[in-house]
Every structure is written in C-alpha cells, then in structure tokens.
Amino acid sequence: MIHPRDARRLLMDWFQSARRDLPWRRTRDPWRILLSEVMLQQTRVSVVIPYYERFLDRYPTPAALAAAPEAEALALWSGLGYYARARNLQRAATEIAARGVFPQTYEEIASLPGVGDYTAAAVASIAFGLAHAVLDGNVIRVLSRFTAETRDVQAQSVRVRLKEEAQRLLDPARPGDFNQAMMELGATVCLPKTPQCLLCPWRDHCQARALGREQELPIKGRKREPVKLQITLLLVERQSAGKRFVLMRQRGAHESRLQGFWELPEERDLPHAVRGVRLGEFKHSITRHDYTIEVFTAKLSRAGRGHRWIAIDALDSLPLATTARKALALRDELYTP
Ligand code: SF4
Image (tube, rainbow, N blue to C red; front, side, top):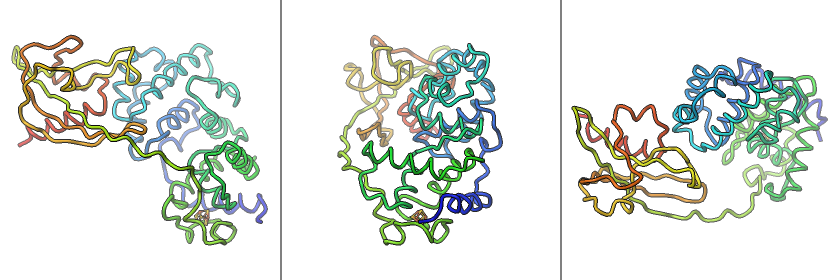
C-alpha cells in the first residue's frame, strides 16, 4: 500500500497539469467559494458557470444577496433547480452580513443554513487553508476504487471509513488544492462507467485496478424504480392593449416545493379550458418521479382562482419553474419562422 505522502505527491503533480481553469478556482474569496460549491451540488460545471457569473455580478457580497428580494434571487437561480439551495444561501448570506465577517472556522461555516459537512469542508479548506477533507460523490468513487471498498458506499459506516481515508491522504500543507484535486480526478478521470485508468496518477497503486474490479466499484445499494407520471400543461394566451399575456400560476407557501415560483396551469386545474394545438412534450425528473409533460395551447373565457395573466415580456424577471421554461420554449419554437 502506497504511503499517503507519495499518493499525495502523485495526485498534486497530476493536478498541477490537469486542472481545469474554472472561475471559482481563481479566487480565495469565501463568498465566491461558497456560492460555487452550493451551485455545483447536483449540477454540472458547464451549467453552473453562467449562473455563477450572473449571480456574482448582481450579488458580489453576502450583504448584497441578504438585501435582495427573494423573488429576484430566485429569478436569477431559475433553471438551476433545487431551489431550496437558493433560499438557504440567502439565509446564510443574511447571517454572514449580520456578523459583518465571513465565518472562519469549519464549525462556524457548518452552522450556516443549508451548509453540510461537504460544503463546510470545501469552503474551510479552499478559502481558509483548514485541513478538512471533502467527501462528495466523486471522492467516494475514487476512494472506494483506490482502496477496493467492496461494501455498500451508502452505508454510514462505510462513509465514515472513506472520510477517514480522505482525511489520512489530505495534504495538510495545501488542503484546498488537495480536495480540488480529488474531486477533479473523480470528475475527469475516475469516471463512473469508464474510469480512464491509463491517465490516472494512482494507476500503479489502485487496489480496484489491481483486482480488475474498477468498473464494479463503488457498490451502491439497490436503487428504487422511478415513478412514471404524465401531466398536461396549457398555454393560454390573450392580447390586451397591444401586449400578449399568458396565464400563469404561482405556487403557494403551503406547497411542498418551489414556493413562489411561476408555472403554466395544469389542464386538470382548468376544467373549462378548451384544448387547441399540441405544442409537443418533454421529460422532467424530480427526485424519484419521471414526468412526461405534454403542452397544448388552449382557450379560456375566464381565468380561474389562483391564476394570473402575465405579460410575456415580463416573464424573464420572474422565478419560473423549469417546466414553465421548457413549455414556453415549445411556444417560441412555434412562433420562430
Ligand atoms: S486507477 Fe482507475 S479506478 Fe483507480 S483511482 Fe485511478 S481511474 Fe480510478
């Protein structure tokens, strides 16, 4: 088994030449690091970059986000999904602004709303050079292969062991770079289905590779089958005073998700609507639910309760549910010559 010091050196030498130049890697500003880490949860780097830049343009400090109306922040986040992240980030920004200084210990960072162990370790190590190892999906995959962990990585005891392993390997002199190197290795080389072992700095020391089991690991508990659902959205438009309006519904505070977001009405909520042209369909997944969503134009003499006519040119300033964005894109296709 390779000594941690040698594993570290191999990894850090590789990272030196292989690291991608990402906007949040050009800073040690904890606010920027926190924003990038929150946005990157469950979301690909290429999707995050434009959101990260727009968000920072508008909210360059925690105080700027703390002072913003929630609807405005959600509108800027709109399309990234997992909106609880945006709400928690604003709550965290409010706490940081109230303190007057960004928290500088792991424990204080971890106590911010919506900040778990992973995010706290990432911010503490990258922004403040504190020796806390991160354990995200990428790191779990790399370490379970590197150490040939054949138990279920979703088990808490296995997570604890992998975290200990990450902490043992961590470079105490450069913990932020080390953590980023581990995540980079998982994101670009130790890929889920096709690990690129020939490009890996640990190829001669990886236990899964030595056993020929790199494609089998990590072992994850049985996944539950997704629930398939079908819904129909209606695009109801009208013209008034030279402007076009579309009927929208805002999700209420009592609803389980996406409170405050705007979406197109569902057909089942407008029993008097008369269907027109079928605009198309798209897929949308939320946790374990796979939706197939059909979109029709429709006519309606009067909007029902809970619905409002919104000018089409004002939609961009509202927090729109992703399903509304996708449905409105079908409308745009219809009107594009
Ligand atoms: S040698 Fe292959 S399986 Fe092992 S850590 Fe590297 S990329 Fe992953």
